[in-house]
Image 1 (cartoon, rainbow, N blue to C red):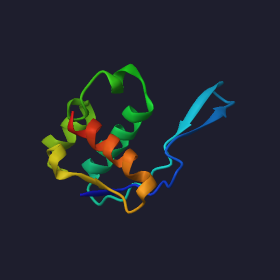
Image 2: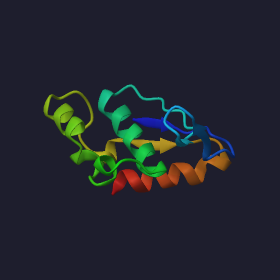
Image 3: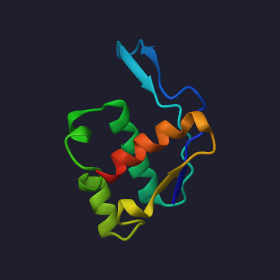
Image 4: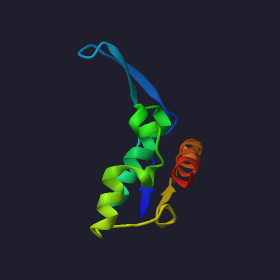
Length: 105
């Protein structure tokens, strides 16, 4: 699996979410994945990078209920080492490395 990050120099941004009256963070990450579990894992990795709810931050990615159940059902990948996060944009390498670090923990 490959998750392509192509975010240039905009590794993180933020906007004000008026509806929920809070600061909304933007990842500016493009995810290209063909595996159903891998895309959920990638999304959780990005959420952990940005900071999320205690339900997401408090568990390892593969311990999340929806990921564990999808693995039980045989819907895709089963381990983090089946995912590679890559970029061909030099300014995005730090983001890709940071996401890989989160994914491997």
